[in-house]
Image 1 (cartoon, rainbow, N blue to C red):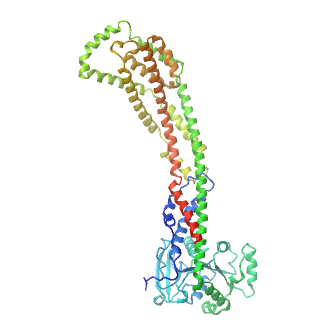
Image 2: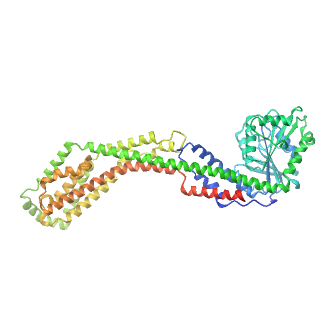
Length: 587
């Protein structure tokens, strides 16, 4: 029989605020690149906090107290659970383990399933009146709820859990999870098990977390005394109050009725009922609520500190990335400059002489005849198209001279430096993995595509600059240095100088090549100055075009790092959560 009615006991604890409710979801947005030694702890905290926050929210809504039976394999935990509940609810015996899944002894109609914080766990409810007489073993991944109608325990959930040292990881995990829900613990051990490492460490944790506990040492020999047990545990660094420990002797073949009547067990039941009475349960729940809030605040505060360390390390990483980028840029300029040797300077001077040799003393009459002949075609638009086509062909010819090897080499060296000097040593860190993904590194095809794109923009700029300069040339000045044909020729030569790697010495080269053709007239000097100005702008734009590809690679690394950092919005949410948990402690 499955009941659906709800049961309400005492008042609910103060409701969780928006920050706590949202934290379960935004915790997935916490990131860290793995630049500091605290990175593994960040991953542990972000994996653990959502569960603890879900437990915290659930316990605020749950009016009953949770009492969890914990212990190692073969300690008789289920036997004592049955004895406390007064019924053989959980299977017991010699074979190990007997408890395959949690069994909850719950007052009928209690809303245990509502907002249960472990969504992967299935819950099945039964009324004891309709339940089969054979004790249950429970099933991994499922919580079996056995309902009762005892008013004296209507405010308690009593849970038998799988063994803490179970060979099944799922069983160990559910025991740990249910401990997070608990307000009090009944820790069951035995004479041969109480010094075992796993149960001992968990017992130590219970003491450190100030959880109310009852320590039952089962299967004790008659000669063993409580003092001996306390001395043995204190020798390992755990101090117990004497009235929190009970020794239950080894029971005969049918232990259930025998244990029920044993004085030590009856004394435990009396202490249990007093400590967890209806009158004392609300203060206990409030105390545990404040301690959960305190524990969460410590963990959230620690997470914030670790993330701040990662952010500082990320800033330092970016500074080192910038230094490598600057080094790569300088190397690229140096390589370009080396390509522009003395013979290149002589080639430029020859090209300028060849260009201006066209404009001899008979140039004006020839151009006059040519102008008369071409004027009708200009009106029809044919000549302009030819000129533009000629310009485009000139630019295309220069483009073919661009050498991609220096840029590709600079980026390859830059990438190698990043891996050697900026990659975390931990191969499991997110940044280590991301830096080695192909999407983070430009390949040769992408480099060429980006340079060609920059080149197209430079072509358009040079054409536009030529049009502006040529508009200022009068009809009677169509010869010498001030000819539009000569002007375009000079600009193309400037372009070739830049593309050939001579952008750092452009002024000197251009000056030595053009100076013999410049007269002292104001117009010619003005034209010469405009050409120099344009040439300098051209050199700067070409440099920027080359650098933009290296800078793009640098930016890809920065974006890679930024994608692994926790966003400011998430950090602000964590700070709000920290403040809200502080308020929960004081309520």
